[in-house]
Length: 77
Image (tube, rainbow, N blue to C red; front, side):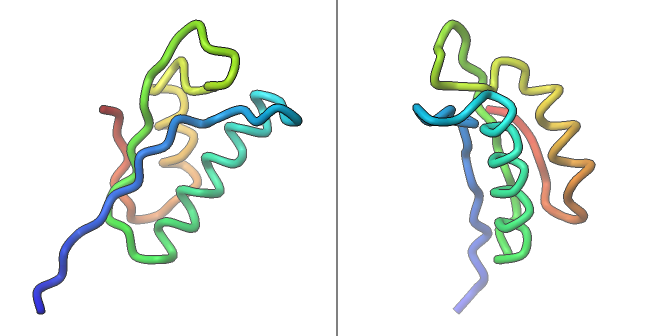
């Protein structure tokens, strides 16, 4: 069977008992674990004016995630 590349899409969701900083840390940890599990891409979504989403600036989050990972491709979409 041929290898099928898989991706992760994350919103950096802020749970009711967490801060935006924790959500960004969780997103980074998810990217690191995704890479360890063999996923090929990590995508972040951009949403504004939502208290439960911390990914309002994908470029900044992408830079942070890319600095914390080695091989996984990181982007927004």
